[in-house]
Image (tube, rainbow, N blue to C red; front, side):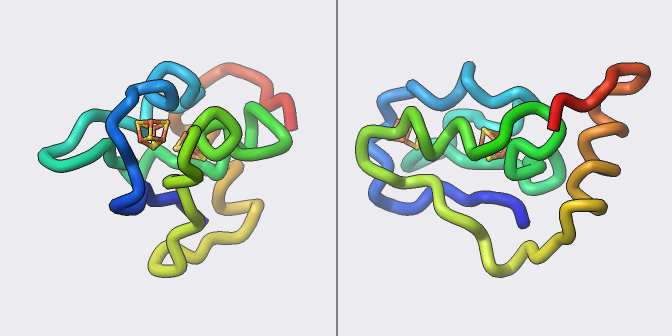
Length: 87
Ligand code: SF4
Ligand code: SF4
C-alpha cells in the first residue's frame, strides 16, 4: 500500500530526495506523498526510505491504498520503463 505523511511532519524536507519514485513534495501544511507514485519502495529498496530518514516517524502506511506487492511492482515498472527492479 502507498504511504502517507501524517500531521507529525515538521517539514524538514529530509525525505523528499530519498524517494526513488519522486512521490514526495511539499504540501500546504506539511510534506505529502502522491499515492499514484508510491510503491512502498518496492522495486528500489527492501524497506520504506521515507520512514527510515524521517526524524519524527511521520510517513505511515495508508490503509486507504491497499495494494499487493505485485501491484506495487507493476506501478514501479510504469514509473521506471526499461529498468530492472532491485527488490
Ligand atoms: S515509501 Fe518509498 S516510494 Fe513511497 S513515498 Fe516513501 S520513499 Fe517514496
Ligand atoms: S522527513 Fe519526516 S518530518 Fe521531514 S519532511 Fe519528510 S515526513 Fe516531514
